[in-house]
Image 1 (cartoon, rainbow, N blue to C red):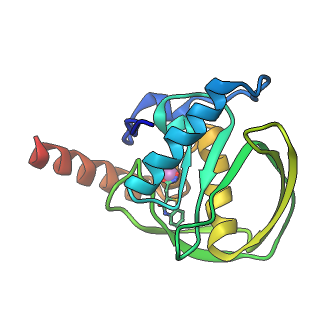
Image 2: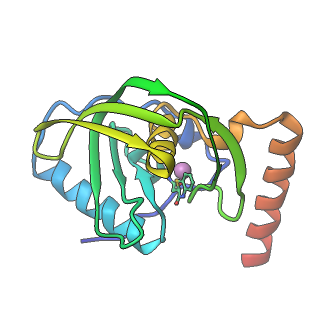
Image 3: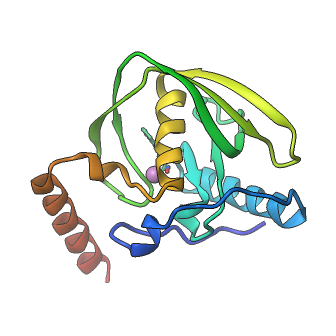
Length: 167
Ligand code: GNR
Ligand code: NI
């Protein structure tokens, strides 16, 4: 197992689009294990491969309170989305920033697990929001891009200041 380095916004690599997984091999299983360890260690409720500079359509999520319900989504597709959810979002790539983003309240997702088994997941609330947040990462989109240019500018300034302080 290994902890992976999480890219920090702004980083051009966060804007690369991920490609579908075509081979369900041991390398994929290792990536999923390492991503799960990295997510739990952060700690976070989700992680997209894009955030660890792997541009494949792989997501791990655990939005449970007990942190015992790992969900692995490979090549995910949203087939149904209903309602409107306003949950404040955070992102491991944008540490310390929390903002409201409009998302669907419920989603139905089709995907594969790390073994290549097809699965369908119906989610609502935080899990549904997290799925949408992670699927955006796979398309190269970070949640702050939904905000006004002014807010994005302020966020970049705050992150730069954080970095200077930690240096
Ligand atoms: O840890 C995370 N928390 C979170 C809270 C509300 C909505 C989305 C998220 S995802 C985030 C982890 C992360 O950055 N995933 O990409
Ligand atoms: Ni994120």
